[in-house]
Length: 427
Ligand code: UD1
Image (tube, rainbow, N blue to C red; front, side, top):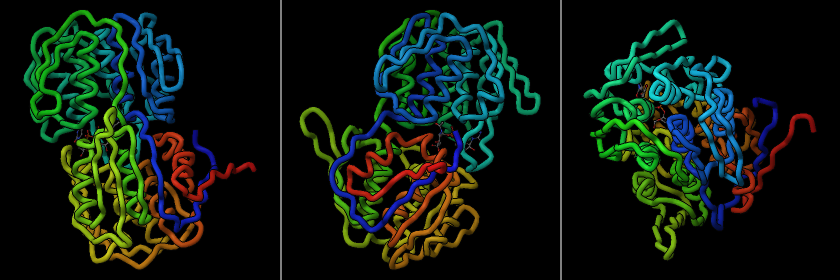
């Protein structure tokens, strides 16, 4: 939970060596919520040991399920004892992914009550698509301020169209529809790798979901869902963060436990900057190797839903571009308030001007260590990349955001040669 600890980073060391990527946060969170749908026990593997996962497991346990840690990154959930369909403010305010309980509890129990979720302050983040989708399936959805209640005698498949390809709404409707009567079609569905991972998990439990990974997903409702064992995919955003950190520090890093196609948009953009990015098949696994030039070139970036450039990597990429050769332009298309990190980067000497959803970055020779804050999770990643590049010492506060999404961050960075330590406020 929030405290006054901070990270102290002595910058200027090119990262070298190899780093192993953990399980995907944004796949693991809905998969854990989906366990509520099962008639048996589910064993989920390759879970990252991060705050968001601890919080969602607390919510699942508070609903009445049995949650047991079987080993490192392995959890067993037995939903048979769930006796509540209410996600209170106290539970929901801790993380955005608590909204997946709307679809999961509605499908399982015909009723769900959630509070508008917490999460990173990067924009308005409404839930209108989620609610529109639940209503199309026949649920009565009532909004009383921050409390959303959904109920249905039975859910019936429907044709649903989203105005914007939303990750959260696509997954929430998949959760609700897989127990509905008949066929549901989600048009303009999100295509992110974690959408596919959730569909694969639901199918293993007995669901019938086709087309995940394309923009049309078809779901044939089923009545019974059995327990199963499933391993979560690697985290593409964590992998991307280390690729950017390697490139930004002039380093040479091998990324292990990664699915390279998930990172095609980043790899292409890094190559445009002059960074050498190679994918290798080492027989059992793929690895990505990043070898950086002395100074990357400036580029233009527009964030887009997958397979476009991910909004979650826009922030760490801004740090790298702060010292690139030339003027870079970034357009943030997904979230209207996702440039908070640029004010902190300016404190380190970056030259960045914001015009609405656009950032113009004039590459400077170097960044300088400073006292900065992580204003949200990926802004925290941006601060880490900047601190690793900077001359001198940077202290990063608000670590709770970073701990929500990055497993064993200091250990992994120290393994790459970084000079980083966590200072406990009461030391
Ligand atoms: C998820 C991720 C987040 C990532 C984002 C985009 C989780 C827990 N979070 O967030 O890390 O940055 O995808 O890849 O997985 N929208 C609406 N109405 C809705 C839903 C969304 O207007 O009902 C809009 C949003 O404001 C945004 C866009 O659709 O502009 C995409 O949002 P969405 O994909 O839903 O993001 P999240 O699920 O919130």
